[in-house]
Length: 123
Image (cartoon, rainbow, N blue to C red; front, side):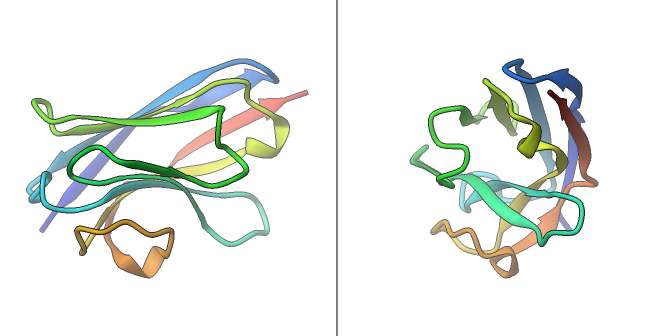
């Protein structure tokens, strides 16, 4: 049973930066896709960034150019660097591990989830 433990998050003013980190435990880290999702109040959870086992990345249009997903294979961690934050980035952020080696933004493809961490961006 895989386990994902998130850290980071918090409150920041618009155009500021935050970094989220996720430790991946008891999971075949190098075989599958890892991703970050977020859920804003009243909205569905959406995929925003994914990275596959060779480090290829994909981003949702809403965060492309501002967010960067990365992974540290030695530490079994995946991170999300968020720059130029906007109030609409506010929400609960989740790291997730897929059951597949290919990446998608479909939450149903991801079987292990972190506990979620709040990000609040004020104008």
